[in-house]
Image (cartoon, rainbow, N blue to C red):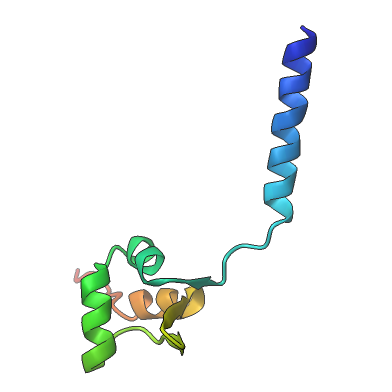
Length: 82
């Protein structure tokens, strides 16, 4: 019983630590691809040719703002025809 209480308290500590951590505001290409269901190859293609979501380039690192990814995906929303 004591072990169960300790395990439960440990899990609660982990949950509280996760809640305190801020959500990621920037994603790398792989995470952005997973977030949007757009392939990393397609994101790279758009970076070189234009037409994709906004991105930030810091040296060799490419980052995408979550808000920019949401706006890009939302731009494809269409109303259903009745």
